[in-house]
Amino acid sequence: MKVPAGWYVVLSSTELKKDKPLAAERFGRSLVIWRSRSGSPVIADDLCPHRGVKLSLGTISNDCIVCPFHGFEFDTSGACQHVPETNKSAVNLTVATYKAIEQHGFIWMWYGDGTTAQTEQLDWFSDLENNKLSYSEHSDVWPIHVTRCIENQLDYAHLPYLHRNSIGRGFDVSVKRQFELDDKQIALRFEEGGGFQFRFPNIWRLEIKTGMFYQMLAFVPINEHSTKIYARAYQGFVTMRILKPLLDSIFSYQNSSILNQDKYAVVSHSPNSSIDATSEKLYPSDAGIDWFRKKWVEKIGEKETMHG
Ligand code: FES
Ligand SMILES: [Fe+2]
Image (cartoon, rainbow, N blue to C red):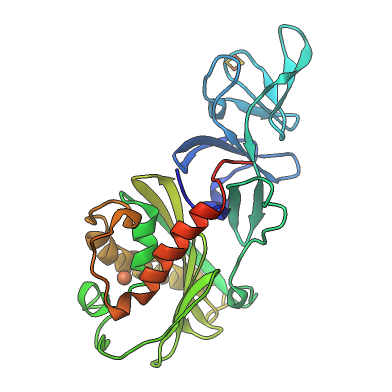
């Protein structure tokens, strides 16, 4: 799948258990994701190089993933450390691995040119570093290209329509608004207070009340036709242990009902990818989307999207 090179959120930390490999499709590839003995995430192609079965059906032992078919063992670098039949390693037998890191409660994967992965910083939102904030999370899969999901979050003119009975009530689309656009982000501050920020390649957050209340989304490409969305509500109002679960579930419910209002329209986009949408007529409120398309295409052109 052609997307810009970068560190992508690919999974929530809570989904990846110790001692249990997980199969996940990302970027149109079948991947196996597992934890090493130290707990670090390992991401590899979900295909045994011996006779092509899914490694995710296997087990984890001694920091290796063990193929369920004939028991070959592959270490965290993808090298075959043990072939039962010969009782030896097989250095030429490797499974492709990807750079992976765990931060902010997500598993991140470097997708793109392997040489730049060393230098590129993983991007995050400084205001969510605040340890007074806690979050609840849910996820959903939308049957549409990742670009359409991201653009929906850069589009404020839909607020009084798709969200007329929720967050868009009374929102005035005729007020001229100024985006902040650069190579790493697309941001907008509302005069009414708050604002949103998208950071390439796949994270977004909305500030509802400074230091207190945020919504955060990660748009994870599954393949050309589907995207997994992780949605978090961060809050700092209630720290009382007894009330927090209740509040978290209320926020989570609100989040998912607002996102469902978006999903209703967004999954109907044609063409599937906004990069092919050359005949759409953009308006001034679409300035963020216009910038996103230019940068997305430019970033794909900059670096090859082969894994490292
Ligand atoms: S197919 Fe994996 S060990 Fe044989
Ligand atoms: Fe929306």
